[in-house]
Length: 112
Image (cartoon, one colour):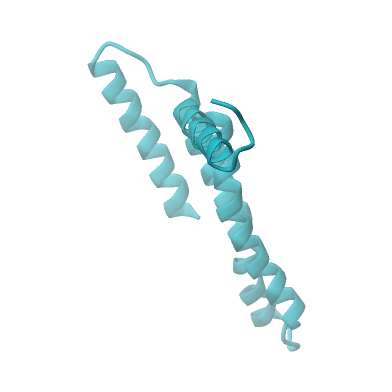
């Protein structure tokens, strides 16, 4: 987690430096994307870090349902990225919109 936070802070700092160099500023959407992606990643992998700790501290092994739940949270990270990008990256929303319109045309659900 320390590496992830450090890397994210460094990425935001470098983006700000690059933006200042060209006379602009860092777009809030980019900052929000980095922060949300990092936050969701940390939350989704936190259970995977806690299970070995519980295993170490308690004599009983964690049940398979606890281990499955930890794996489930890892998969949530993958799905959450789609929503994070959809909310924060305009070009990604435009790409999705175009692709969905093309799909609707191919399926005959919409007229040209």
